[in-house]
Image 1 (tube, rainbow, N blue to C red):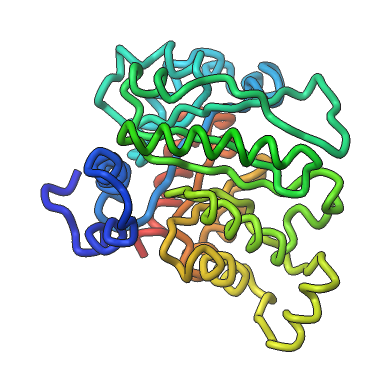
Image 2 (cartoon, rainbow, N blue to C red; image 1 turned 60 degrees about the horizontal axis):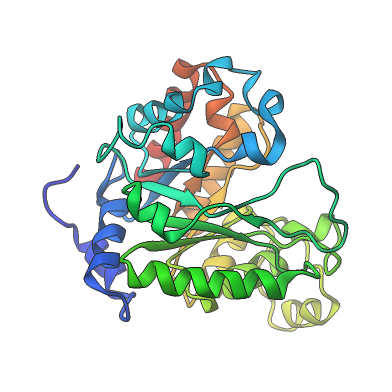
Amino acid sequence: MPERTTARVKEILSWYQSDNPGTLANLHRLLMTGTLGGTGKLVILPVDQGFEHGPARSFAPNPEGYDPQYHFQLAIDAGCNAYAAPLGFIEAGAARYAGQIPTILKLNNSDSLSKLGGAPISAVTGSVKEAVRLGCSAIGYTIYPASDARNEQYEHLRELTEEAKAHGLVVVVWSYPRGSGVSKEGETAVDIAAYAAQIAAQLGAHIIKVKPPKDLVEHPEAKKVYEKYQIPTKTMADRVRHVVQSAFNGKRIVIFSGGEAKGTEDVLNEIRGIKEGGGFGSIMGRNAFQRPKAEALKLLSDVMKIYQG
């Protein structure tokens, strides 16, 4: 961990004018931990896939991952800025790893057993109180803009955000458009990703997580504007730049998910585009923990090297 706060971290903290010292201290901790500490970049390990996709789909490729403590250790050994997981996984390692890495308690989750059609919504599965008890630096919450159930999600998040900030925690929002308002392909369209980032910022998120956007504009009304003002969307760097701009002109931390497991070169090329476009980092789950540990450490190290420039 760098001994002194860097100018870049001071600059980022200055964007969060309304926050109390507790929240700023936790944001500082996230930004100053691990290999990328002090750079203003973040690589976070999220492991909510056991809940979301089921144990075999998540952990059979690397059976060590069935053990929650494996993931704490992987995040620490890899030099990640933080580790994010649902209540059970955090509880299973919180005491043993207390203080060794900032943790993010994922406060809502869904599973793959229920088919919610046009109204996907995740259940609230944890609380701010639990996050404080477990020594977490942040809460995490997923919203599905474009879901018919979005109002309920926004209202839950509003309550949790207010409580988290009052208790000095950081708020991380996973903003994943899905549901009846977008096509399957449109979930990662550049206009939709930018809109998702804007919504999360407006809802008070400190850190926003979106999917890497594709070169596609979904909404007809948006398409006219992208064409009229010639908003560049051809390269990943162009699209990332636009998404970051959409989060208060880059004054909110925007990180990008790694998505489904893919080949190493594909992962690294995507990271290069995110870095070039001014993205603040990555949250990388399956692409890391589904590989044997040595391979995962090598991949995460290569990702961090790209962000270090």
